[in-house]
Length: 159
Image 1 (cartoon, rainbow, N blue to C red):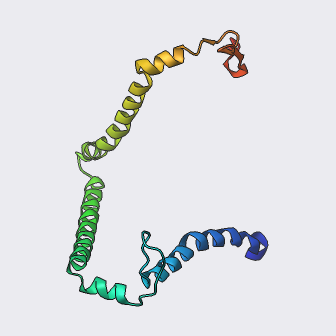
Image 2: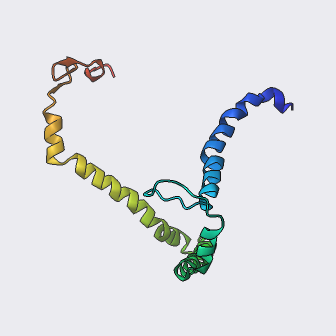
Image 3: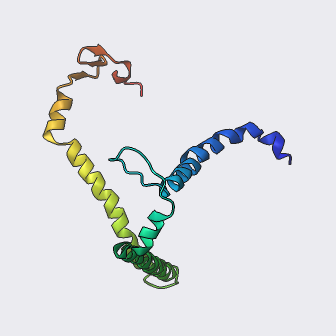
């Protein structure tokens, strides 16, 4: 299989441009600003070198925030993956209660979509919405909407 004949080289220009625009350029700009004292409220940008990084390493509150972030990330990753693996193993066991366990596990997901559909229909059927729709004066026999001829609204008995 000759990939050069199937995919011409110019087809890579658009994805490469998107990659450069949204990933490489912002990364380089961020790297540049890391060595400056840029502030959106002060005019001008000055090169400060590694002073920003030295401040991060010496500031006690930033060190605590970094420690909290790292510990939270490690703990939640281990717990989420551990509980997910445990639930997957339980749901794939050949148990008499396998269908009940799957129902209990997926019921909140199903109820979430069902409830959002109920809230959507309730808001659509609210008196204000219904009065607005009824004020449009739809005549389905002739396909008229407020006196305008709308072909897709005509009633057809042949359907």
